[in-house]
Image (cartoon, rainbow, N blue to C red):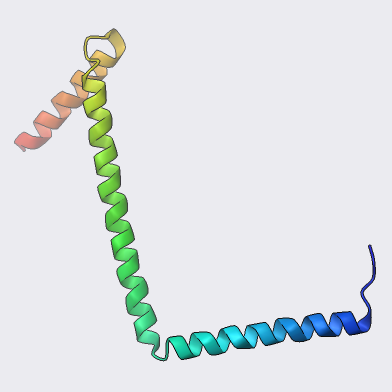
Length: 93
């Protein structure tokens, strides 16, 4: 492994420090109030969670509907009837 010279290490360190300083200044200028960041991240998390639940529900519905097309097969048919019976009893409660 090649050894870096002292000047190369120094210039790399200075470049990294300058980049970190620029990013920190950009962050501070862009979001002068921390509550904006917290509020934005909270809303983003709520929307992300709602989207995940909604997407999962739609996938389960599509899966059950697809399996119901094959209810005449021996193994899948029994499973689909069990799921259908469970859903009907849950709706009655």
